[in-house]
Image (tube, rainbow, N blue to C red; front, top):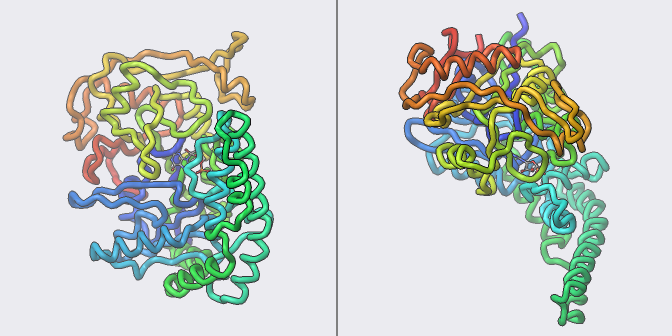
Length: 458
Ligand code: IMP
């Protein structure tokens, strides 16, 4: 009897609270796999009053009896990963169940430098990346210049591959640095051209072949016990009839192909990508759980039709503590966008929806939900427009629902929720065309309401 693959995806622009959902659903699973993204993600799990913040390690690590995997689709910064491993060990968490795909790609120091340099060069047009080297790392993967986890295990191969990848980076970074200095000079901030020019041409010590190779070979020694063929491990679990969770990072609207390009991440966070990023087949997936906040947030630049710049937006920011886990940036806040949510539901073919942070909306008189967009020319869009310029100028049209003013953080069953909160959830589920199975009413693990009983994935 084959097991079930359950994919968990973000339905908006990230930070929906997927970590907590994964943590809860992991109870009914035997293995958890991250399938894309890198340490641009960040999730916080509160367990027995203790807070755990992860960027790379799947939340499942807190269960000693479950396999916890970083799949081939992930880009991995070994310094960050080792920092997380050390941090967990210090707090007495066993990491013996962590497996890392030998085929996952490594974020190298030059990727981080290029990410920052690229953003600076874009100036006002910058994407607002997390500057963790994600885009340049995936670019090298596509260029076939990537360094993979398995390369860490053979220093000779590692050196050769770094050498091939490094040379074009040194050149690109030198050019970017010269351009920057020129621009600064043109803007009247010059005066030290001679010294600046030679600084730009001097080799950056962070780009030295010998020291990078040594440093990364050292990481290889430490990571070796965890390196594995994670696709095969997934098949073993599924073929034995077990449940495997596939944990997405970022979210649907940040998807490289289907999101608000170019204001997206450089991987595919949608459910279909679990197949590629973990090495399973589409028919291994039995359930897809989407996660949305009860309102909307976005970090970084790019279109956000329901964005607010008013009291309600500030309410969401403050009450929802909407500051990035990874970069600490203030998140942009707005009303629930049902046009975008319905798009995410279909794109991922969700079978269940989780609505998080419903408690944050308490105290707002009216809850607005966007049900269509109107373009600058007056055209109506009931579906998510594929055209960038339409999306950038789209004005949302709202349906207004009554708000509620009650402390939801103690609610544990549907009946505990105020009728207005239930009506809000029903409206969302009807519009999006997917049942809501789980509602978050606070940061704690127990601060949830299961809808329709039967908690978990089965
Ligand atoms: P990158 O993934 O660092 O290249 O950033 C590309 C875009 O994705 C930027 O707008 C980031 O703010 C956004 N982004 C990346 N990771 C996350 C995340 O985990 N949550 C929310 N936004 C993210």
